[in-house]
Structure formats: C-alpha cells, structure tokens
Length: 216
Ligand code: CMP
Image (cartoon, rainbow, N blue to C red; front, side, top):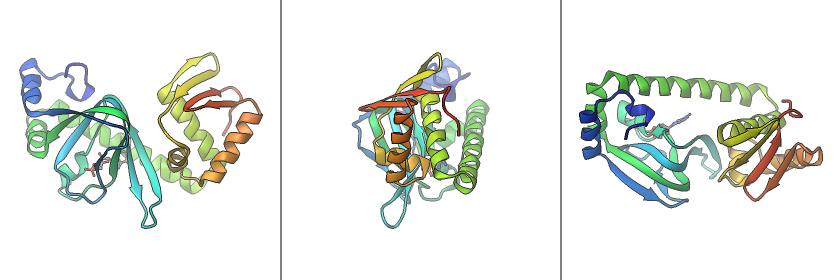
C-alpha cells in the first residue's frame, strides 16, 4: 500500500491495519462495479487498469464524468452523505481494485487527518473539474470540446516526444463522444478533419496527436 497517494504519510502499523481490512479484487473489462442510485457500501481505489464513472439518461444515453486510473479513488460520496450512488462505475480496462467497507473507511478517515485531507482535496478537484465541464458544455462549441478532450486524454495517458503525443486509450467512439458530451457523427466529423490535416492519426485504440497544430 506504500506509494498510494491516499495513504501517504501513514505509519506502517496503520498501513497494516488497512491491509487487514481491505479486499483486493481483479475485474475484467466491462464489469459494472455499481450503478447510479444503488446503496453505497464500499469505497474503491484503483491499483491498475481503469474504471469509467458515468451518468445515464432515461433513454440510456451516457455522460462520462471521469476516468479513474492507478491511484484514483471513488465511491466516497455515498459513504460520506449516506445517499445513493451518484453515478455508475464500469471497468474499461482489466483492473485490480482495492475496496474498503463503509465502516472501515469511516474509521480510517476519523482516525487520520492526512487521509481526510486527501479526500477533501480530491473532492475539491472534482468540483473544479465539474465547473470546467459545465463551462465547456455551456460556452464551448461541440467541435472545440472534442479537441479539448483529445488534448486532455493525450496529456493524461500519453508519452510526448516534441510536439507529438502518442497515447493508447481503452475507450470506444461512443465513450469518447460521451466524455466530450457530443453526438457520435460530430466526433467522426472532427476526427476526419484532424486526420485530413495531418494533426491526428488513429490506429485501433492508439492515437498520435500533433499538439503544435492544435487550437481550440
Ligand atoms: P458515489 O456517489 O458513492 O458513487 C459514484 C462515485 O463516482 C462517487 O461516489 C464519486 O466517487 C464518483 N464521482 C461522482 N461524480 C463525479 C465527478 N463529477 N467526477 C469524478 N468522480 C465523480
């Protein structure tokens, strides 16, 4: 557990206590960990792989709120406020996930100010990110949102060499549209435009993006 930001600064005896109380499971891509409105009983931390957090409309459309990767935690909201899950969580890349029961999570949080502060900082980040998303959905046109999200994915998952970023993501086109909050035909239109201009090249789930030529 050493090296996980959430547990930074905890003594080895505290880490041992967590190790005794947590479970570590491996989930295949596609596994749904929980759905929006379920009762929340568990806190999760991603050790490897990735998990998407999303909301669904009554018609089955989805909006991806966030992609959780190594070191990210989720599922804290319903444990803190006692309300149902605010979003669904689905594994999108085979994942090892640490889980803690609601009781253990609360005991750990009450007993450790650093851990509580880490969670508060995480919630602050999410509020900022959400404000930014509201801003983009309100003021930014759809094409710019696609480009902005591509750059974000490149920064978060890519290796940069000069102006070129190479990145691999386990998201299909539906999911990339849901992340950017655009319809799929528009996503294809923007991708085609970027490919024609030599800004983007796509092969399977591998992307090459030329940052120098990109503006949004
Ligand atoms: P909980 O409501 O218990 O279950 C869904 C989880 O998704 C939630 O806790 C948070 O951990 C996470 N979550 C909800 N909304 C967002 C968001 N806007 N950005 C990132 N994570 C979120």
